[in-house]
Length: 294
Image 1 (cartoon, rainbow, N blue to C red):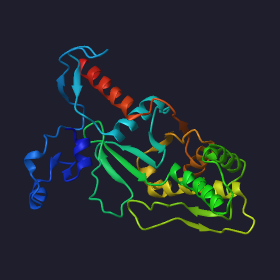
Image 2 (tube, rainbow, N blue to C red; image 1 turned 45 degrees about the vertical axis):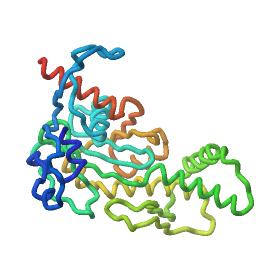
Image 3 (cartoon, one colour; image 1 turned 30 degrees about the vertical axis):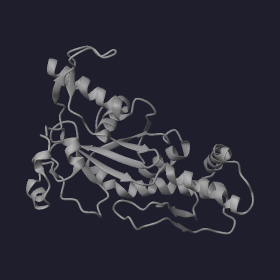
Image 4 (cartoon, rainbow, N blue to C red; image 1 turned 90 degrees about the horizontal axis):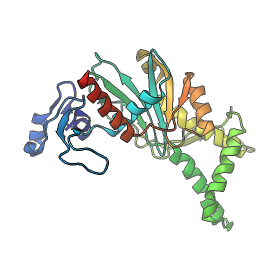
């Protein structure tokens, strides 16, 4: 297996590229089950033995790579508009993540449960992917809309479940038409975070005549501000980040786009296609094969 997958299993030393056998033995883990780990650069494990659909016989088969690494690779490869510096990849879907590629020479320190950044092997040997993964993203907006519908139902105002999309669209429209609230502040940690699992959402500055758009804009801002707090400015500066590539299902949302620009003060590049892990895996394989032939 690749070091990508080994690192996701745990009990794996990324610097030395070996399993932590002594720790595993102390827990009576059957270490003979552990597969051989190759370096995080693509590694050919075999070749196709016959033609399958449009795949020809004799094609090289690459050792499986990590989903996040492949998705980041495809986003940077297809959407990075910079000829210098580094781009971080910000994904907003149900949850949200922000990742930065860290070049050779970096040695991650032993992480704790309070750390918001995790480090994973990237594509080239010695490179790492610094990842801040939030449990809160587009799911916060959906939860708010569902809560409105549930409250209306409890008040005897029946709202057809098929009206969700219409309510959502109106919520977005009001939020987009409103500048960020200077009074309402929302920390939207409905699900907590991995590094602070017991923390929950907090609303401050709520006043008597708060408008829907004002509340909505603050909710969007809170999601981005929370993600930014997990990967602070100093980390971005140290890794020469000068662009943000935004992808994911919610990346087309103009409110998210505006709040990302306001929070990070960096050029924003929207990447709505060719940013998946499947496409990234194909690109990595292609680049690897071309490199071998060169």
